[in-house]
Each structure stands twice: as C-alpha cells, then as structure tokens.
Image 1 (cartoon, rainbow, N blue to C red):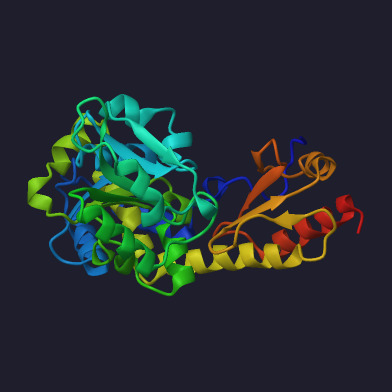
Image 2 (tube, rainbow, N blue to C red):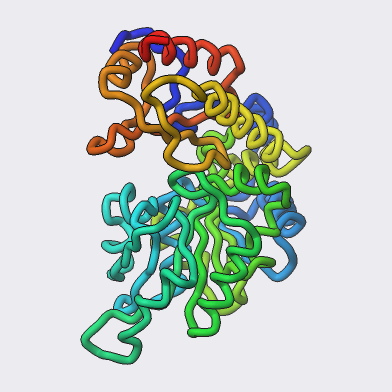
Length: 346
C-alpha cells in the first residue's frame, strides 16, 4: 500500500465531513449553552426529527452506530429474550459482541437472500415460544440499507412489522444508511420508520456527511421506554450536545441528507455499470444504495490494493465491497474503473 492513496472505496466512513455540516458546527460554537441537550439548538433539531419522522416520537442523540444500536435494543427486551437478525447484520458481525455483552441477550443470525429478512425466514425461529429452555425471540432487527447494499421496500418492512407485532414482538431498524435507502426508493425518511411499522430506529448521519452523529428514534410509544436513562447508562450522553445536534441540523435541512445520498448512490451505480463486460468480474448483489459487491479475481484484487483501499468482503469467494460516498466524484469512479480494466486485462 502506498503512502499516497487515491480515493478510498473502503467505507463511507472514510469520507470527509460535508462543508454544510462544518458550517453548522461553526455556527453552534458561539458562547455558552446549556449542557447535556438542554440547549435551544438541540430542541430545534428535535423538532426537525418530528417533521421527518412524525409526531409522538422520542429522540436521543448518540456518538456512534454501535452505541445507538445498543440503546435501541436495550429499550426493547430483557436478557432472556433474543434478537433475530440477518447473519450479515452489523450488530452480529461488526460490533465486537457489544449488543450481546451490554444487553445479555442472544443474537440469532439467519442466512438471507441479498441480506434481507422475510416473514418466511422468520417462521422457523419461533418454534420454542414458551419453553424455559430456549431464549425467547422478542426483537427482529433489520438494516436499511442492508450490509450488502440492498434496500427493504416499504411493503417489505410493513410485512415484517405485521409478522412481528402479531407475535407480540418488536421491530428494530439499524438505519446507518437509511438516507441511501430512502433516496433509492424515492420516499421520505419517515416512510421507512414508524409509518412502516418500525418500533425503534437508529438513524445514522455519520456515513452521510456528518462528523459523528447518530440518533435513536422511538415510535412505540415513547413514554413507555426510558430512552434518556438508557442512553446515559450506555455512555452515549454528550455533555456538549449542541455540536451533535448541529450536525443533524445541517443533514436534515435543505435536503442535504437526500442530496448526499442520491449522489453516493449514483456513483455506486456508475461504478456498477462500468463493470459490465469486464472479464472475470461479477456483481453478486443488486446495487440499490451506495455499495457495490463483486466477485473479482484475486490477482486483480491484489493489484488494485496497491493504490486503493477497500475491503475483501468474503475471502473464500474473492468478493469485494466498494463503497461510494457523498464526496466521491465521477473522476474517482472513472479512474478506478480504468485501473480495474487495466488489471483485468481489458
């Protein structure tokens, strides 16, 4: 790996902070303000969440996605109850066991087609309800967009919510890339949340232009779930909350969330379209958000990683993940494609 890397395709977390977010932080950085979320800006941004996600919600801001997921899941179950998720779910693969350690609850990971759970897949998990010898499934957790770049439609979420609620269970959504899913589906953020039947949502801004801002949104009903106390115990309460709130102010105003997500999705689509006809390279999942998953010859992977940083998603099958972000340019994509074609021998 050279010291001077070209544009990274490893993660949208590698991206810079959007200038409008930095400007919002700068505007917040004046004088003194009440700590721990008691400031005027945090109240105003909470109202922005109501505009996007609907009335009768509760919102708590957090530092990172793992912390937000732990808070959201803690609200929904006890230690003898279990969380059903896709095998590929971030809570199952990339959070170092944090949900299981902090909650004391078991994760049940299911193999899924293109990263998405369905009611049919859930049916077999619910066979031991009432048996004291087995953990009791209580929460279904889905990721939007999924870890393999696909998006749950509104109808698919509603079908899962109906299945879950008919069994006295709860639906959690890890919305680290919720904006990308909403952009590709052509719906508002709220259409994928409580209006679709989600009980608790973690909404991520960090991957969409923020510096470090996540939120837990409760729909079910908020007065019964002590979100602020759980956030404090989870070590996610910011003393200088106005700086987290300022990032959401920028993201949720003037459609910045949508502009950023649309651009990232378009760059991923440009990359996927450019791979057509390149020998030895095969897309393994539909490209519906800002990620491209492809099976690539090992020699091409090794050659590309001299200059570009990205993840090999599955070493056994030589499947890679290439992520686009709000600051990915057409020139970045075209240069990367040129390198791919060169190393693939076209």
